[in-house]
Length: 89
Image 1 (tube, rainbow, N blue to C red):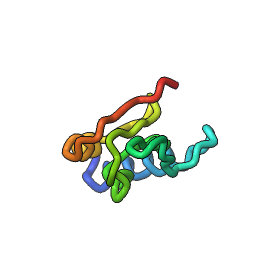
Image 2 (image 1 turned 90 degrees about the vertical axis):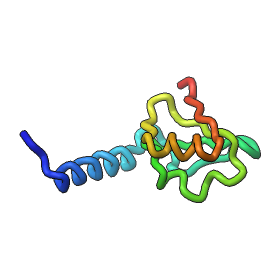
Image 3 (image 1 turned 180 degrees about the vertical axis):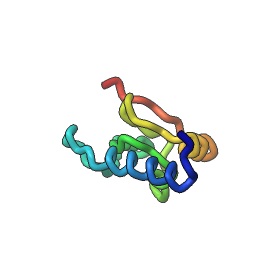
Image 4 (image 1 turned 90 degrees about the horizontal axis):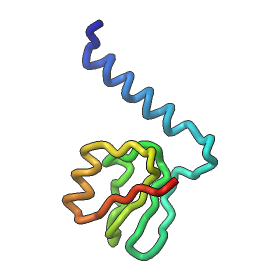
């Protein structure tokens, strides 16, 4: 089976939409500052869009150990000198 670029884009968008809609953990999709330079991101998928306008003054972020962090988001964090931590649970 061969997928067109449009079909693949639709599939990815649908997966991201469903992951964001899954609120079974009771988590809010907003970040909550832990300290002046630490931020916890509760989204299950972390993209550059997730990070946009949220990294000023942040030296590290914490995500769920099962969160998906896109390569572009990892690059953005690296360029800004922000460390990425995975939560224990």
